[in-house]
Amino acid sequence: MSFSAKTKGELARIYSDEPCCQLAELAALIRMCGTLQLVGGAQKLNIKLTTENPAIARKLFKLFKDIYKIHIEVMVRRNPRLRKNNHYLMVVTHNMGSKMILEDIEILKKDTSSFDISYGAPVGLLEKRCCKRAYLRGAFLGGGSVSDPEKTYHLEFVTHSSDHSESLKDLINSFQLNAKIVERKGNYVVYLKEGDQVVDLLNIIEAHSALLDLENVRIYKQMRNDVNRIVNCETANLSKIVDAAIRQIENIQYIKDTVGLGYLPVNLRDIAELRLEYQEASLKELGEMLNPTIGKSGVNHRLRKIDEIATKLQEGKK
Image (cartoon, rainbow, N blue to C red):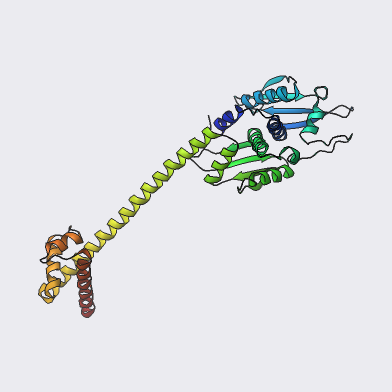
């Protein structure tokens, strides 16, 4: 099961005790996975809802039952794309009160005989913070997805309406997030890409188990990146030390072969002889071998002086 499917399974099991939140969540689900069906010439509308997730179908059934006391028949159909999962189809007919439901969730205007359809979010249902969270939860169940955090951090809502996508974006951003919209294959996608933003939205819609799983992955990835960074840094430093030691030995050997180490001042000759004898020793170890001992910086300073002398000798030879 994908990370997105697990998240939806968790959210589908959340049932609010507040009627206002129940209606807000139902409003989002109808907008995201519902279509309106004009019945004959009688100017009647049916609400047709389809989903591939049985948990979402059960939630829709319960919401209609709890809010409107109606029992909707759930029909199971084989997916026409030859995949293993089924389609769950529910229809709310005119006789069941589809017009009243559409008016309550602000898709149709009340007290009018015309079909004046609103595609945006139901502003009147989203005055409370808890209702906003419930609406976003319903929108995610109906048309949302979240990527596997092992691969990338990405959460999105896919809508068919430009107005609804703008409403969703504004609603998400009212929680101090930074959602954006992109058009993809005729649909409008509201998305979040940063890990912190995805975590915050999962917290808003109360997907706490998914949030903890994502945070565990983020911590593991951060630790792995830190270890790799330290190893790379240590490797780079070690390479620099080895390269410097090889250069120092080559310069000392050049001086020895051309003018002899006696050409060097006593303090430089002592460190040069030690470097040739103990080629794998660190600067600190070389300094401790001298009498009197000197620090790492003192050894480095003397070796730089030897490098300069070797360079001058080479230039003079040229």
